[in-house]
Length: 133
Image 1: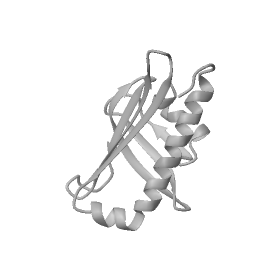
Image 2: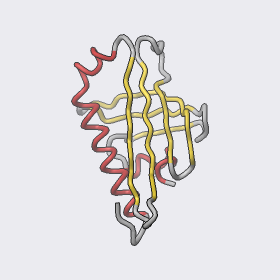
Image 3: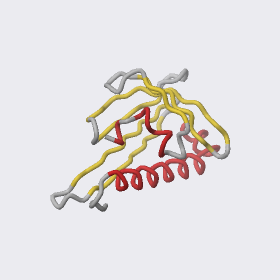
Image 4: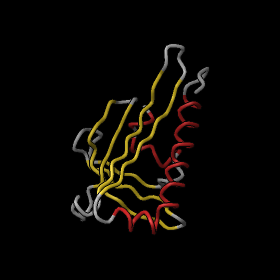
């Protein structure tokens, strides 16, 4: 359940010390506070896919129109035939401000998402005794 338990993210996710959500369902709003390059940064996101325990995806839903800045993030837990688990994360950025945002914050964004990926993998494996990724 970890991947779709947005309310529990702060307990294991060092990149996201705060997360509130209206409802974990398509259209639900998530307000994240992330740790970005030593600063706390707030972001509002809208859930576009959820498969409880296996996948969640959200997209930028803040004040900028999508032609200026858009992002989509998907996190998926896949179980193979032997019971092994794989955690996949994907992020997409677009819009006219993409280059500027990535030039200014790209390294911080990448390292934050890499840390979140690492934290999620460790958390999922710790919660599923006898399994390995």
